[in-house]
Length: 53
Image: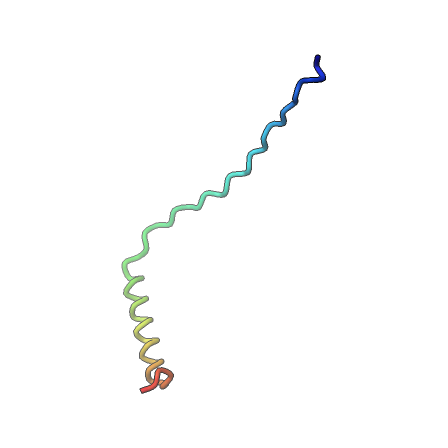
């Protein structure tokens, strides 16, 4: 009778991915600095003549 019993394996659980630590809020000067850097980059690209004109 025991020959007809189906044995089940326990399903292995995948390890949980590491939890990312939440970052603090960005400082207020960061967006301003990014905008200034983009403006300076555009200025120098225009001065070098790569965009034509």
